Image (cartoon, rainbow, N blue to C red; front, side):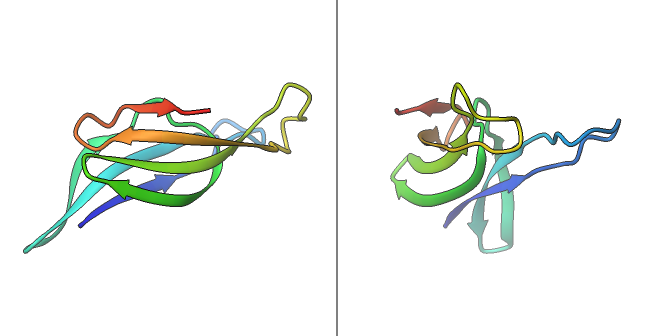
Length: 91
């Protein structure tokens, strides 16, 4: 009954970077409704979602200390509070 939507908007001024916009949605009898903006979540390739009551966890891939900008390689696990939208890095 809850979902996390991840959008990677392109950089509108040029270059090869992009942003990240994340939101929490809930299914109601009238359809999906927006609940909260997620803050503090970074990375690419969101995967392995697990909903656990009032929070969820997921994994993204982020940059390691020697990774080039193009090629993040470090998996990071996140916890997202479904009420506030605050994301916390777990590892």
